[in-house]
Structure formats: C-alpha cells, structure tokens
Length: 465
Ligand code: GDP
Ligand code: GDP
Image (tube, helix red, strand yellow):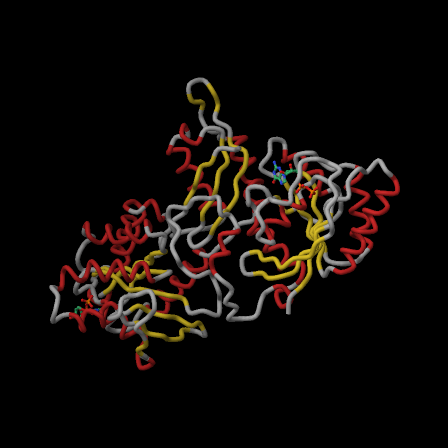
C-alpha cells in the first residue's frame, strides 16, 4: 500500500525542485520567474526504497493579490486533504518569513503528520535559517538541498519516522528498475561505489573468510556452520564455480562465501597460490563483512596487512580472527600486543575488531560472530545531517582548517551521502587545497564522535556551487 505526500510551503522555497527530483523529472518544470502559474500535479514518486504519490502545490504566486493568495491557500488545503503526509518546506537561505508562518498554520490545522524541510541548506547563511525553522514548532528541520540532491537519506528517515515503518516502507520483493536509483545523490561521484544491493535486514548478511593458506579458514568455516551446512550457488554475480553457504546465527540469516570449498573444487586445475589471491579478492567483493583469519602462532606478515588494507579499500568491513589460540602460551600478553599492532598498522580502519578464536575447539566463535554483526551495523550506520553539522560547528570553532596562501579554508556543510561504508561530503571553499592531515582529522573525529569503529570511512570534498 502506498501513501500520498503533499509538498507545502510558500512560493519559491524549492517545492517544484524537490517534486521533480522525487518524481524523477529533470528540472523542466522549475521556473525562476515568480508569477508563473502551474497546475497542481500528482505523480508517482520515489525516494530510495520509498514509493509514494506526490502532490505538487507550486505555482500560485503573487502573494500580494488577496484573492490569489486565497486561491493558493485553498489549493494547498486541497492538496493537504488528499495527502497522508505533509512535507512542509522553508527556504533556509532566506530564513523564516510571515508567509511561512501562515502556511505552517494551515498545515498544522490538518492534524496530519508533518516533516519540516529546510531547503537550500547548502547555501551560505543557511545555518541561521535552520535555527529559525525550529521556531515554527514543527519539530526538527531536515536540512536538504533539493537542487543538489543532498540530505535525501535524512529525508527518507524522517518520512519513515513520521509515518511509521509499516506505512512507509514498501512490501518485499519490489523490483522496480534499479536504474532510477541514480535519482538520488546522482551528482555525487563516488569512485568506490560498488553494486552491493541496498541494505535490507531481511536479506542475509554476506560474509567472506579470507587469509593465507593454512591459517585455518576451512576449519573455521566448518566450525561456524557445523551441521547446518547447506551448499547453494552458483550465484549470480559471482563466478560459476563459486560456492556460498547459507546459515543462521542467533536468528540472523547469513550467507558465507566459501572460498575454501571453491579451492578444493578447483585445486586440480590451478596452482594454489595464484588461485588464493584471485578468489580472496572475489570473496571480498562479494562480502559485506570479511573475516580475516590470521594464524596467531605466526606473527603478522605483510600479506596479512595487505589483505586487510585491500578490504578497506574495497569499502568492506574487516574483522580479524586470531586463530589457533589454543596453541598460545601467554594469551593475555599476546592479545594486547596483537591488538596494539593492529591499531598501529591499520589506521584506516581504526577500532577494527580483532577476536582470538580456536577454530579447532570452537572457543571464541560466538564472540567473533558478535564482532561481525556489530561491524556490519556500523558499516550500515547513518548519521543525521543535523547531528553532523552540530558537531561540525564545534570542530570549526576549536580546530578550524588551516590557512593556505594566506586564506583560510572554509567548511560550510557536512552530510552523509552514503552508507556501506559510511561516506560523507564536506562542502568546502577549496577542495584541492585542503590538507589530507585535516581530512584525516575529520575522519577520526567522525569515527570517535559517532562511534564508527573498524570500518572504512570515506570523505569526499566538494566545492560549493
Ligand atoms: P517553488 O516555488 O517552491 O516550487 O520553488 P522552485 O522549485 O521553483 O524553486 C525556486 C528557486 O529556488 C529556483 O530558482 C530554484 O532553482 C531554487 N532552489 C530550489 N532548491 C534549491 C536548493 O536546494 N538550493 C538553492 N540554492 N536553490 C534552490
Ligand atoms: P586454510 O588453508 O586456511 O583453509 O586452513 P585449514 O583450515 O586447512 O587449516 C590448516 C591447518 O591448521 C590444519 O592442519 C588445521 O587442523 C589447523 N588448524 C586450523 N584451526 C586451528 C586451531 O584453531 N587450532 C589448531 N591447533 N590448529 C588449527
């Protein structure tokens, strides 16, 4: 069952722009000139996985004319009457005007759920308008840029919160053409984008187990899945001879890419060493979380670090299993030492979870799986634009970016544009001049403040338009 949304607000706040974005039309209907009259329109719309109808109320301009304003109000009221949810939009750049207040009263009178949108949030001075928007008494404003497609994940969240999940989220196996996904945040080039399907808790979490030969991968997989082993595959998107295993751990569906099984299958044709690199990479790309199995009796080797680094660069979430822990004589000292080295050698995934296990005896396997689930959760985490920018204000006050060639670099805005792994866009005056040390400082701050240990975090710098 779908729902209907009305985008409501005074003229020129950006309603048509958002309408066109949600309805998948390209700006053709936006007009800069006040006084252009357009008909009220209803259209199929989508925002990520949300499907709904949107009623556009834009186009009844010239507020000085009383009768026209009356008509505009009537039009707005009619749209509101048809809607299940009101997206009430203000222009954060312009600030809140008496006209906004008048429209907000109309919206509130309806008693329908309202999501307050502060549009043009990317613009200079928008922060003040955001604060004013609070004063409308419609709750926390969701900052977006309808024009640039920013803030839309937060809008999605807010819609779900306002309507309730049951109402807002589509039924399962909704297979609309994937191409339209580009609608949202399309202008943000993400070099690390991978065709991982969108997050869906009902889908199994995909895990791969990688590591050097003899680290204990096969033993670990067999210990994890035990008797419930169930071979499926070949899988679409993975090579024909790959094998995946479905199993359930504490009511969670999991899918494991069984490179070990694959290797057994292929051993006859190919040299082991060569194959293990290729199938390791394939496994990493398949997976959301990758368990790196290290033999704890053999110190870290370059290849182990390369694997973990590769996982991070592929945008996946690594978890380390220090295997063969049953053979270790001074486990506490060794664990402290190994963890310290992990932190030092893999700063790009600071806070990486590393768990001692024995695949042979089964000890530590529950802890390992807990680490996998926790890491997966962080990898999927979304931080609201409001929280990010409140944090950013403090950062800029206490630790602003340095000056380059006598001019201070300015950061205007911070927003999370993707998850899996978390990716952020920093809107700043001169992206090319921003020192990488400062970017690292931001990444570390984000990781600390919003509790995102152990996953790669992407920051993309972008100049304001
Ligand atoms: P409507 O009258 O509420 O439908 O507003 P429009 O969608 O026609 O937009 C009014 C003006 O605001 C147009 O010039 C848009 O290009 C501009 N606009 C819309 N969204 C944004 C935005 O996110 N940022 C900025 N800076 N301008 C925007
Ligand atoms: P793979 O090449 O990474 O798949 O490694 P295997 O699972 O084939 O294991 C290599 C060797 O290490 C085998 O002899 C296993 O019995 C042994 N092994 C694996 N896990 C453990 C463990 O937790 N403790 C001990 N003592 N031996 C293990």
